[in-house]
Length: 206
Image 1 (cartoon, rainbow, N blue to C red):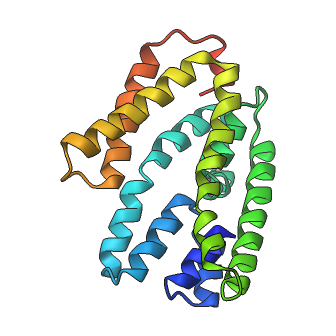
Image 2: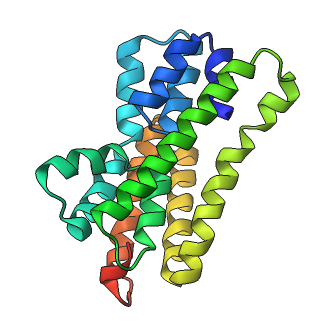
Image 3: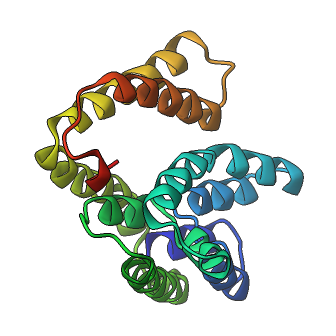
């Protein structure tokens, strides 16, 4: 819903806003893309920015591919449905299968598309203050995903805090590094540390 409102506020049409959620389905990258569109940024720059921001999907897809080992056709479907949310929920499932992950992905996709349509259709009647406050829901969602993961394995909390500190340090001391690259650097560095941390039952989680 928040994305639908934000995209319409950026001047993106109803059809284009809905189409982005139907065919792109990239969560945070859609928010960034909508903001850049509203700022009049060149389309090539928008594509590059969202590509860099989505580099984390290479890591998530690699891990899921090792656990799921789907066939060639199933790999395309699984890849489309990889998001931060579906990855975390899938990673917490001990007996993860392609069918289970696709079930999670389809449910998330349907909810995302439905929310986009609702937000885009009601964007003109929702008070501006309420529209701005809905941006908080994105952060709340990530916290809701992180808490059960940390409860299952305390090491994940260390990795999450480390990643946040690295991203903050990059923004503070290397301001020339764009937001997307900061995320990539933080993820790679935190992941390298995660490999060295003692983990139990590695087959069941990230």
